[in-house]
Length: 342
Ligand code: ATP
Ligand code: MG
Ligand code: FE
Image 1 (cartoon, helix red, strand yellow):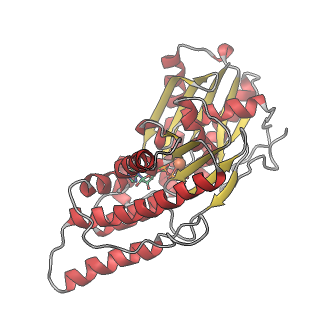
Image 2: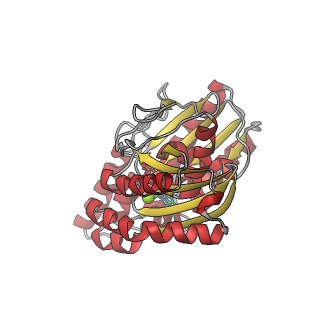
């Protein structure tokens, strides 16, 4: 089984060829980071234009790298939400065109399900499991009883983790996306500011990062007013320590309560080295029999491979999209939405 998978929900245009939901034959990613940097974030119009320019090139490149032709394909998969509507539409249109021109089944995929299934490209998933989704737009704890079933047990009340990284990065003058740069700075500093750990003790699995963001911004502005220069490395380390403390504490509490043996961490923020290290440390220290799976960096950010991995499961479940498949910018779990037929 070979699936050609499209991803264009935000600022990465990506097309992959995935074999049996687990093997990457090609995963071409065209990032728009250089143009988004100039605007300090993702501008929807700019993103859409890039997708239009890149998507056919990415598809051709993916097929070439994978050494496959349209006749070899089993199905075409595409992210149809959540994300930027104009960006999603480019992928949806391209996938539909190829699927119908070559009479291939079309498989609509939820972007966040894709982030979870990025882990399937590393190893088999064992259910039930918990997935921690930490990305630019989401911070969610998802319980999966079995394949394709998503129950959100925790969510952010305000900013997503990645959004918080990007916003405090901006205050330090770092270009968008700032997560990786904060991560690097943090490794050179100390948690000397002791920012608040919001909701860490509350008996739920929800998160809040806007208070932390405000505390950070106030600290920087107050210092500026006093004409005092603060260590950017310490600020980054303090911010990151707070995010990590809350996420790791609440996630491991959920793992215990739900009695799962596999924990997946996915999404762009899963690239954070401090977060990865701390999970590994805590799991070892507490002697937990927990299989902690984090995709390699390239599969943490947005990519077509993860969409192909998720599509494999949906394909087996008989999920198909038709010519009416539309982008759904606010698509949520569970994702067998109205415009898919089962
Ligand atoms: P969503 O998946 O919720 O729709 P998105 O697709 O924009 O949002 P991703 O591309 O999955 O999000 O992740 C991008 C985010 O990951 C950005 O906010 C970026 O700052 C953050 N990020 C990337 N690398 C790191 C890192 N090393 N540490 C922390 N954050 C990081
Ligand atoms: Mg992105
Ligand atoms: Fe994403």
